[in-house]
Length: 95
Image (cartoon, rainbow, N blue to C red; front, side):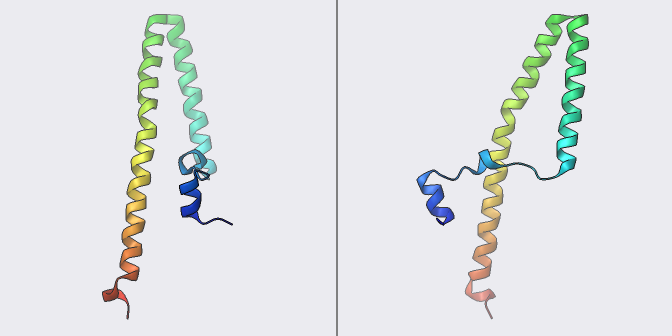
């Protein structure tokens, strides 16, 4: 089995694409939110189609931001893990 560093170097490991929340609660919440979204868009379509289109555009803009948030969370988590590792191997902490 290849090391994680080798997989990252060779481009065979894609953490962002492999991320899947494991909690069933998460899936239930996402499904419920999507159902609310669909219901609201359908109501808007009936009332004022131009508002529905504008709303969809606003939501799409928001959804475009989410990958950037995940990227930053990944970087912050990686940095924290590196700091923890540094502390573990720092001579002043080794007894």
